[in-house]
Image (cartoon, rainbow, N blue to C red):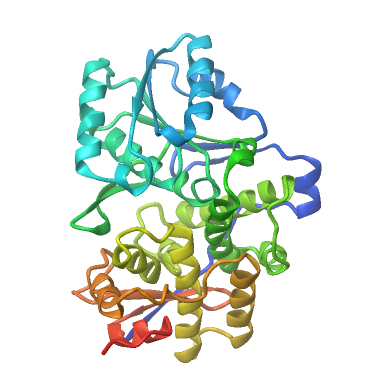
Length: 378
């Protein structure tokens, strides 16, 4: 069994919770990706002017959204039209159904029909799955056109919108076909979360917890207290998650080293999603995966027991599951782990937390990993 240390890289300067509450607007740039990030209330109305500044040669914009985000998408369309863009609206299926080659093929045809050119832009408005699919369409259409992400869920704001990884699923497995295609602009408007069901907010906070474990002790302390989704506190937690992710992707834009720490909990999580036929929310699966990764790391002598306890306490406080649904077949989980795209030399790899970053564990018997989930394969 091989163990590869993934120490935390230098992270952008952060703000305390009290500072974030006093000044909810934040802007920063990830130069390694060419991405500008704007976190601000009512920032959807700024999409047109900001895009005009970032992409002065763009004449047309294709707004990709699903039926769950009609209001934010309408506001984005209005802001773009007011800025003089020729706008086309294209619909994608909601959730994981967007991440299929069939759905992306429909987008390609829509972009062709709308005469979207190499200098134009795709604007993705929605959750993580939609941003993945729209980003993959932008990465591949006419060999790549500009992308703007407007995330509307906690999960998308905290994770999917930044970093440049775009992908679709294949043969029932997560993210098997993809590319690196960073967004030129990421617009985060926390006010779009007001209509989000509480269970979706809870699920999204699993990605915030992952980032907190990797690089934000203050955010981890807030999450341990439970129920942290009140207004500006939630916005600050999203800010912290983006700050941590920005540091990791800046240090390793193409995911060859330190950035792999961001897969913490995800080998388990993706396997649970696939084994459940994607009936399990991504954030719920990641929450279970974080607990399993910590328990596995503790068993290997890599994760301090007190960190495992803090992760378990945070997951419980957020009302997220600690273990897979009892009806989920352990054999299917084992199969999904074996098919994980991150495997090396045919073997699954797992990221476990250390308190100062993470360790990549390669060559572990998959059955031992499944046991960290608290289930037994017979």
